[in-house]
Image (cartoon, rainbow, N blue to C red):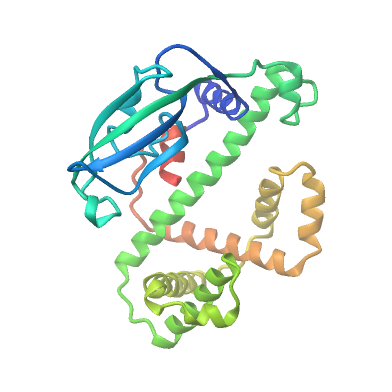
Length: 303
């Protein structure tokens, strides 16, 4: 897999769309337009909770609404009032609406189309390309995509190797290790959502048990691979990982220096390198099948 010119073109289009402005239009709604609507939903003639909104702004093509909703709006113009028929999916979150046929009365108040910025010198310089040239922007975009691709391939290979290792080794996990890992996951979850340690310990054990068990199993198996193969973190690999990570920042040298002076960060990066080396040791003894793919396919699988 490699980054092609078409991949770079696609990323440039994405960058332009991210910086786009919206302009009101008189024509009918198309696939990538934005609309402002009032709507009222009903099932068997009765309105339902959450089925009504005013001045609702909907960007078409993002899959925010239930199937059929956007299709029912396409082709209409601002100022039109109409009704669309849809069916709620069987897996819809509201129990009373699962699989139900519904009608939505729509008042289409405004239609807007996206205006993409031109690749001007001013626009290009926003992305840190000092010479403001299209060629410079393409080179910068390609470099970033290649870095992302390298990381995605590494993560995919690591994930598949670990999955194979886990399937091939059915081991009993000490309950104490699982309990300890559950506590770690609880605290991490609480920190992410602004909670304290007391709130963390109140989180249900069941939320974390499966993940905790897997993390313990993976840790034990990789630890055994490291011990059996007498692996030590390759300092050149550690250096390369830090440089690769730092290249995503505005001042890579500053990031590299910051890491080199922080023992905890360096130890973390050595653990990453050692884990990679363990995965390579597993792959060296495994049957590996190569498969062709594209940049977009691989990145979508990572999402």
